[in-house]
Length: 81
Image 1 (cartoon, rainbow, N blue to C red):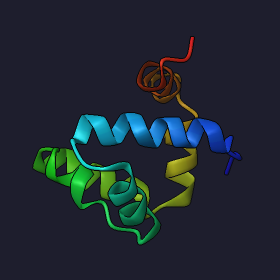
Image 2: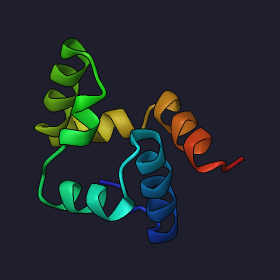
Image 3: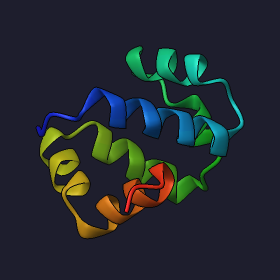
Image 4: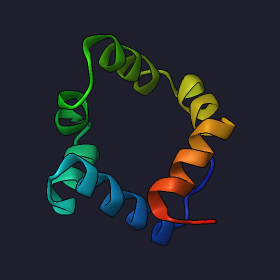
């Protein structure tokens, strides 16, 4: 999997925590523990099933984060141009 710049990861964490309306520390703890309750709670059932499928398959995760759409979303969330 590609290495993520810690500063960019922190920016993404902060942006996502704002969107989910939860503190960044809480989101980080959930992610480190492999819990995605905050993210899954804001998705529909079919979206959350797809999300879980990607999370449980490293090859799908790598493919997902490499897509132009995922890269564009990352840039939009972080404000990167």
